[in-house]
Image (tube, rainbow, N blue to C red):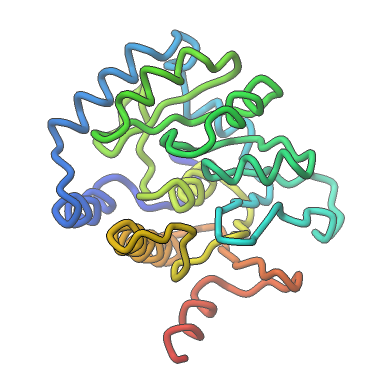
Length: 253
């Protein structure tokens, strides 16, 4: 069930086809990884994943926490007081910075290539972890999925089904934003997003990472065009700016 207007799979699939072609992702390998994830998930994790996520996200401000160098945890105390607590979605390794500030994410979106121990800890403390399967992370899926003791859901990059979701998005950060929008978030605040800097230093790794981040930015461009919820970039000085305005400003520099 869709809660609000969004980028549905029919609209997202052609975008992902271009991504898969650029990076050499084979659909058969993606499907095999998804099948393995489905087998490893406990029965409760395969049941009604979107409805379970809706209960955490619908009608609330969603703070999506990324892993930009030096970003740190979101200063949630700066948010305007309201009767409803914002929901925090951490993109993979951003879980570490959240936990260091004693913020337990409501939702973690991960393909298991970061410090997964922190995600296991947060899951034990109440985070719903959305594990994403793709052709390159099957060993990590086998290793880590059995370690999670709390609530799980699964996702992949192909057609959604009742047990594995795909509401759009490519990297952990933009997939978290897509998920928040799809499940009825009131507003989406992007904290710790940087599409031009990475932590890695090896040239080939940097090039590939920056190419992925470029697609993440395009994915968010597409989401903003279709989104019922306004999307803001939350700057380190505490100000907010609409995502499209931030992108336009950077493109003219």
